[in-house]
Amino acid sequence: MAGLIEPHGGKLINRVVEGKERDELSKKAKEFKKITLNFREISDLEMIAVGAFSPLEGFMCKEDYHSSMDTMTLKNGLPWTIPVTLSTTADMAKGLTEGEELALVDGKGKTLAVLHLEEVFSHDKEKEAIQVYGTKEEAHPGVKKVYEMSEMLLGGEVLVLARPEHAKFKEHRLDPAETRALFKDKGWKRVVGFQTRNPIHRAHEYIQKCALETVDGLMIHPIVGETKGDDIPADVRMHCYTALMENYFPKDRVVLVVLPAAMRYAGPKEAIFHALIRKNYGCTHFIVGRDHAGVGNYYGSFDAHFIFDEFDPEEIGIRPMFFDYTFFCKKCGSMASYKSCPHDSADHISLSGTKVREMLRAGTVPPTEFTRPEVARILIDAMKG
Picture: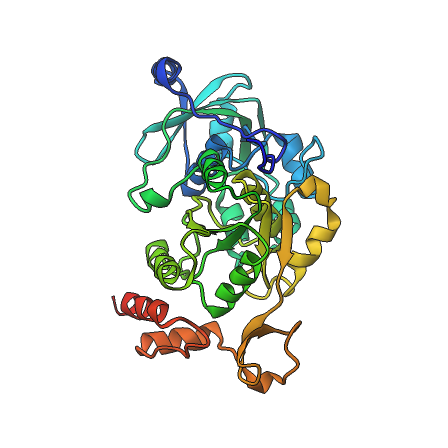
């Protein structure tokens, strides 16, 4: 669409088949060998199908798989930092022939897609753990997922017959083609995307509004796919987002759209990955805060900023907006960051996640300088439940 940023690779991929083609392929798929997908793979399949993972047209083959780890690019040189793969057991792989068609099914046996099998190759789990996540420790949730996968990988293009059914957040589920149409309809040429898997507190609100001062619109884009077990559930978070938008954001300049992706917790590598996804959704700018997509103490506070220096900005395309650690300063009387506040940390209102959770469990609303009371009440009610 004229005026909007190009998708990564120049073309928005669409692997969903419909009408007569879908009916014919669905009949044929009944005779194909079946590969059962887990939740992560189903999520990745949907992201491929709608173009959120453009330019990928299927699960990675060997060359792209290793290139994404070795050089943070696809084999064609396009920036790409996270492998997108489909695994199967060695026993299953022995019965497969490169060039055949496979039915990809969910846990109930429903056929979701057909994979044109181009390659069967070994899953180098240790390499993936070290080069993508920076650690071999299974305590890292992303590494744990890699180790849980099977030992062989299946690469090839997909044709999607049926997208996963989603009971929740239907009004907020927009594909990249739909968000691009929405931005065009609103006349937004400069759009900033905000990635989140947590409720939005005052520091998040502050950086969103700082970004909003320089662009036409903001897309709050929370992940509602697979996350860690101790992360706040998506339905609770969505309640928080809508309460915040109703009371504190200009309604004509902010949209809330869910992202059906799974979290990897890959820190800096995932910051690039998230930026490219938002580029495909039509965002021209992307907020990168402190410890983006981090977990535990595996990454430095600003590693997710530094990694962008390793890429040509033209090849990334979307423009990162870097923000320092933010807080409420009692002497400034406002939200600030270490870049803008001259006062001692004793004057900063900053609470650890552990302390906030303790307060919420006790039914105590944290200071308004830390979180909006509407959001706190939603979280307190959720914890009581």
